[in-house]
Image 1 (spheres, helix red, strand yellow):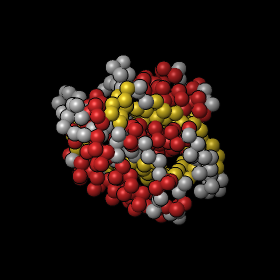
Image 2 (cartoon, rainbow, N blue to C red):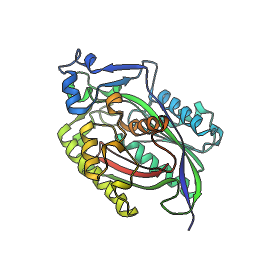
Image 3 (cartoon, rainbow, N blue to C red):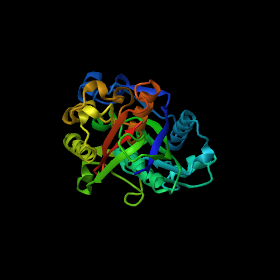
Image 4 (cartoon, rainbow, N blue to C red):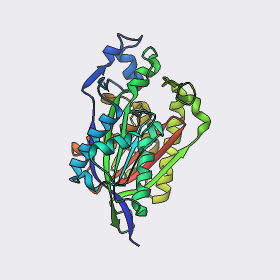
Amino acid sequence: MSRMRSVLRGCGSYLPARIMTNAELAQKVDTSDEWIVQRTGIHARHIAADDETTGTLGLKAAEAALADAGIPASEVDLIIVATATPDHTFPATATQIQAALGVTQGAAFDLQAVCSGFVFALATADKFLTSGAAKTAIVIGAETFSRILDWDDRATCVLFGDGAGAVVLRAEEGAGTLADRGVLTTHVRSDGRYMNKLYVDGGPGSTKTVGFLRMEGREVFKHAVVNLADTVRHTFEETGLTGSDIDWFVPHQANRRIIDATAHKLGISEDRVVVTVGEHGNTSAASIPLALAQAHMDGRIKPGQLVLIEAMGGGFTWGSALIRW
């Protein structure tokens, strides 16, 4: 039986020009390149300039994705921005990107699931497209985490960076089988009991401030490996696939050790894992689309291949999606 699929038609990304190395960080806090690399796999991260915002990063990524897709902005009727660092409390950063693109139809809104944001946003867009509520969507992950870091806290400031990635999705009819191109399945989960393990200690409704990111790293690591493997197992159970069937595993880029441990649990070999955390750091909701865009542009991901994405973020939130490229 035929069914509508959300087919990925283009990818784009944008990274700020400024690169902050571990050596530069070692001049600010008590750390070293060896300490950071050994524990995280991170060598450097990009930092937004003073005149760059989450919205401007997201706009450039969206424009690049539209160019890659060969689709004009006038055909877009849905824009979702996954971000934990919006330009304003309101309006949504997505509406500012919508205006900058010259899009006047459809809907534009932000979605907040922290590092899982892109997976949640992709799952949401998929529901719009497959139900017929929209035809062409841009899903953006964009962050300026450098603005919410305590630069005296070496446990967190070494981990994060800024950037944006985007994909263009279009509703197209498929045969209703796993051979279809597009989003094949999504799974998202949340468990608010763990809020204090990874959070920002401020907000307009509580402290009237922006606040700083706080994290219990060991606890996050422990839950990440278990939860991420769990959500992917649901995908395998639903589809009958195994790790050996996946052409490319594109996980959230938080920590190289989490990536390696999760891939091992899922039976996915190292040569089929896209890793960008070394150059980008943890860019939260931007990390998966940044990695997708890089692997797409360098030719690793090819049409027809199965791509598995997954992420976990503060809340806790976590989720996965299986895509036929």
